[in-house]
Image (cartoon, rainbow, N blue to C red):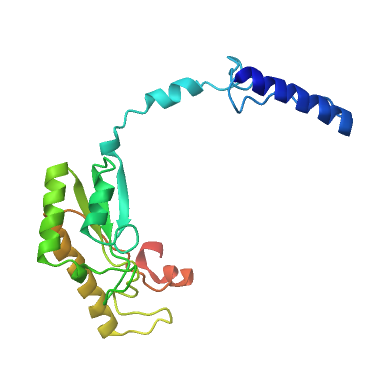
Length: 198
């Protein structure tokens, strides 16, 4: 098969040279063989490309995956399908906040039976689950993008984090819960008022 490719490449290069008045192109080595496939020892790099891939000592069970519930997995069976890939770590994320929607689950979607099933899946397959709280919590301190304060908004954000913590306790036996607070951006000019920078 390599002979057929080389014959095609030679023919193609000769045709290019005739049509465009340019010299034939050297084989780039993209398909194996050729000049580019053989690294020069004095190419200026101390990295041996053949050695790099062999130096990575990770098993598939050491690699993790983030699984947004409702997007990458629609239910417990969807999570189990990801586990069967051989992963050892999985972050279960909640794209939805306050109320669940199609494609944006919240912790409330997963009741007692579903949480028990996820716990059993983790134990049977030696998988560690972590949790990511609602992606779109904005203003956990009660501030919005305009700088207004709403204690109700702050309580809603805190409640979402509590729901994620309860889910993590039920499914993973605790562990980390990732939270992005989504606070409003403060102008950098406010930094000069801080004692640290005075």
